[in-house]
Image (spheres, rainbow, N blue to C red):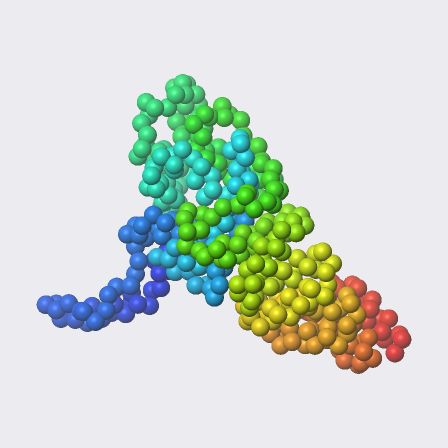
Length: 384
């Protein structure tokens, strides 16, 4: 239900206005006041056409917003790298072709079908974005997609085996694999393998945790469109995100890469935030504070910077600054029980017990399951 016409065809307001204006014109006249703004993705070049699908379906270690952009800026007709620096992990596909979960796009990109199509194959080569085939029609629907390029004579499998599989191309060449780490998820193998599994189910892959720079590259020709410092920015932030997602401490080289970026663009809030998190990870608390405080000047990351500073001030028993951060966060996030709880403890350490109790009670109203706050509140009341 979150997907509508505008996700693929662009904003509809101009289209409606154009149609209404055209309808009001006399039959022997045509309107020249505007053009129909609605977009047909099939009219786009390959990268822009695929970007319409990839805006949701591309799973990549790094989808790094370019400076000055937000995630809401993408419009059908844009390239992905107009908005994001798209960084792919080479280790997402190992020597056996195993890939990390939910990476249909990357699987398709290494398939022989895609490589030999010279940029003609894409998501809508097989998928109709306007409808899903009925279960009874599924086999024949996707079989016909394959036969757009292949012939039945090209299939090397014995006729008996093909009949056992319902003459289904995808049953052999795109088998379903179970993703055990993600509940209720199965993944269709988009590598479109030539050799069938003969009834075996592809095993779930084990992610590769190599975080060295040469294991990452940019989607398509994105790197050619970026300056040197922005390439470093995307790679450094991607390594950080990749490491964080798998519970790995990022290598020290990440800080070196991103420090070079800050030398070029001192006020880059997202980079300052990552550097702050990196410094905190390595227990360089004064440096972490310095980065987060500098990041406060960027509205895009102000909330994240304040939240991280609150944690640093709180664990350092800097109660005045912790309270100041908590108060600022609550001006725009009034339903955050954790912030009220940290504010309560900061107030108590500053001797402001009445306000501390009120803040703790608000935290419990928002989240009654916060047992430590309930116990803390009981102790404060007994002591005061």
